[in-house]
Length: 327
Image (cartoon, rainbow, N blue to C red):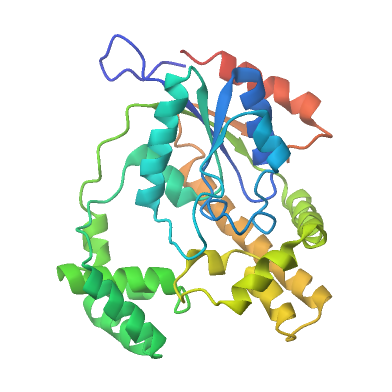
């Protein structure tokens, strides 16, 4: 493997990325690597940034986070939205802090948009004025979803065709960009992005077999319920989140909320949440196969779930891969 120096005499600093679908064992592997390499674990999951959602997002435990430095976990309120751009800025700062401390940044998560934005940069979309955002949210609150969709059908047919009508966050974003700039979101996405960051990225990708992953998802969600997931979701019903709040879409939150409202029994809620998690994992796998496999120069692929049962077999392979990387 060659170091990517871009003509420089010294290679760029190294950052590790531990990626994979939900329930693949990413957090456990990242923790073990951080302990072995004097690393800092940096969250790259769009939902584990919310402080009120610890159990239902499978955030690392307080005990695990005390073992090595962890960054960007539980740092925002569920009433805030964390965009890819906002996360990218925080992640780059955390990476630089780790480097200054002599530690290896280890990014872990399954939010593909975040990881892509970090490594490749973001589209240069002009900022949307506050009054446009307020207007969009007001239209949505007034039940004008169809108007928003119709506006996109005329002004941004590409986004209209791609978006699911219930994907509130992306619907609002596409409408706001169209109104603020007069150009469709797809136009801005074709413009040059920000320059690459001055880091080298080495990827460890966990791709468990489908049946193994599905069993892990079912088992983990039942464990979440036993560990207090319902107690986390309850307060969200007492003081409802804004319609476009990212946290309200966390896998498991709508399903457990339906149980707490009395719409379904607990077993139905658990089965629905597990099914939603399987669909989410499928989308993650599609992204990883399309955006990571065959496209990253420095990549180790592990076709197993990482767990205590097989760590003694898998971890030496991962460690050998990392230790052979140029520093």
